[in-house]
Image (cartoon, rainbow, N blue to C red; front, side):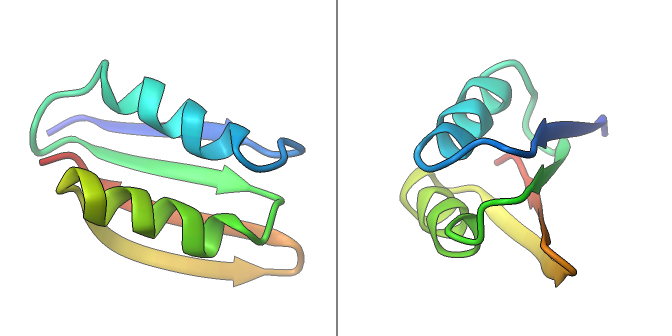
Amino acid sequence: MNRQTLNARRLLCPLPVIRTQDKVKTLQSGDVLTVECTDPGVMQDIPAWCRINGHKVLETRADDGEYVIVLEVV
């Protein structure tokens, strides 16, 4: 299992989702990607993208203007 972090801070919708999609294409099944964002829209957008594409959301958290989504590539 490989763990990666994607810095999508200061990007507005739809760029965090596009960057997440591009990064996931470089990963293997079972890898874990942590996406760090500042756009609150990602809290709905990235989990919805994961559902559509079959990936698993392991964690979402919001902390003082930072939004983090941890997903497992399936």
